[in-house]
Each structure stands twice: as structure tokens, then as C-alpha cells.
Length: 67
Image 1 (cartoon, helix red, strand yellow):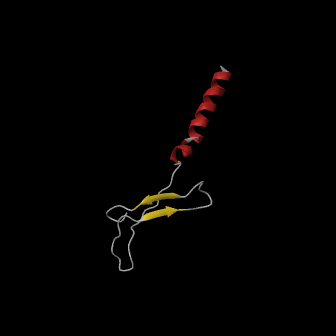
Image 2 (cartoon, helix red, strand yellow):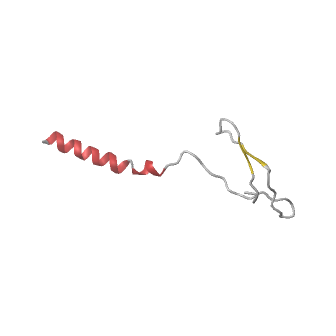
Image 3 (cartoon, rainbow, N blue to C red):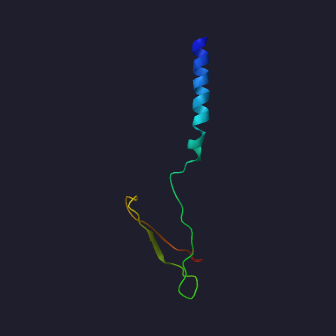
């Protein structure tokens, strides 16, 4: 009986302590709009994110609305 109670308490403790891990996400997001010097939206621009933490640079192209 004592073993079952100990296992039940351990399972509840693990379940409660692991709730923070569910909020973690393995990816990030950068949002913005590409504009020129006059403030006009520029579609089709290559955007590259580079960081020492990245294995390789991440590249995308801005959409028709500049995002």
C-alpha cells in the first residue's frame, strides 16, 4: 500500500512539474513589413535571418503585402 501511495504521489508531482514544458516552442517568429525609404511596401524581397545560434541562415521572400 505504501509503494502504491508513493508511486501515485510521484506521478502527480511529475505531472504538475512538467506543465511548464508544454508552453515551450521550438521555433520563433519574426514579423515585419518590408518598405523602401518613402514608406512604400516592397513585395518579393529576399529576407535573411542570421545568428551565431543558427546552424545556417534562414531565408524567405516577402509577400505581396510586404510581410
